[in-house]
Length: 423
Image (cartoon, rainbow, N blue to C red; front, side, top):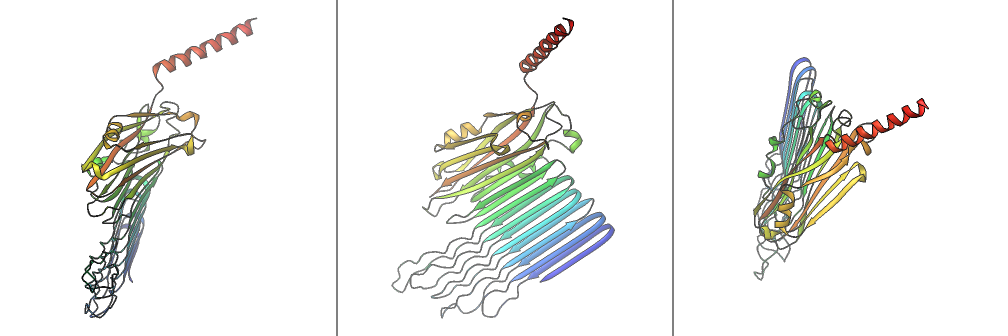
């Protein structure tokens, strides 16, 4: 394992760790592990970890099963000003072999940034490709390596965390001794999770793809940063799933939120895409969970609204068979699902609809934290197609008519009390 550690009292601390699996003359690829840690008591901290598993190598005949090397990278940075942590891991590719099939190396990237005034965390993982079968007894080629990426940032100000995972491609099948086609290997799964935590609350974004052809998952979480940093619905996934979420994206800090009469509490992008090459039906899932401190908003802007801003279809709409959108507020205080089997109907719903989520004062708990979750499941098969949608959650004042009614009611109660006292 490659390790690098920097501990600094004041100023800038930097740690970089790089690990490459050794190249074998013959055999499976070597694993690689890298860990970088930076701790700064007062100042900025940067930690970077890069790990690359080596590819398998050697003679392709004789039935040897040669796997790609695995890779794991961990980066941890802690400081009080600018904090940045980056972890990247690439699994090695398997080798082609007769009779046997090697597997692509798995990849895991984990990055953590803590306590910064500005915190930026990124994790990226890519699984290695599975080995091809030159000839086989009908066995499939090797599967691609799984990829897992986790980025987590916490701090006192602006926070951004991005995780990207791409599963390795499955090996291509050749044929058996009778020259009949042998099945290809399966692609590796992709799982990406991004978390942002700060004094205003938290965002957890999770995207997962485990389809039959190619899998990519991208997740982003931010606090006090514009949602445009993720690209929105225009960044349609070609294959796999995306989940991007921003908490208080229009504010620069807690002071901009405190006591505001109107504020965007959260913004998000959810979506998934499918690629040509398989008739297997599959579902990709993306999810966003927000925990927002709305204690200072309930008096001035208690009404919560969900604005479905826009939606986009990329490629063939016929590849998408079913879209399920689910919303849950405060553990069921408000919840609903919308299911579409027609893409045109889904586009119409997600492009301009406003859902009313009620008065926060009636269901937010005493701690003032609003919990709201969104999930999008998209099922498709047999073609190139992607669907994404952008939304925002707004806190707004009560309508004028309601205020007039409450004012009149308060006046009547006051007059009645005065009359009773006078009598």
